[in-house]
Length: 167
Image (cartoon, rainbow, N blue to C red):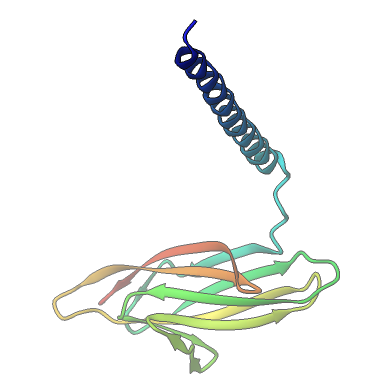
């Protein structure tokens, strides 16, 4: 046999060994990634620290001269720690939300409210809702969508719809 041909065969063997090692490393990487993803899927979900007990508006239909009441009741599920709850209420420009006689503060376009809940505390809030109609409207449907964050982590959404009538 020719020496050049033997060198070529030796080079080919080394190349194939390197290629096998690369393929083996890729397979091991895929197996480890798959195992990690499966473990994340099968892991029981962490209990959400806050439970929305009630989120509703009454009446669901009221006149421009009347007010609605938005009810929010939540419960801190944590046994041994307080949680900071941030509520962001998204609604139409014609809708105003008050807690007592004071309007809720706004952050951007959303009304906001923050409350600290003690362990296992149940919080009950009543917001006053005032709505107006545009000229020419006899009635209109509005919504108030609430985004809840606990200790700066998103935990849920509440959504209510209501109607405002002129007469």
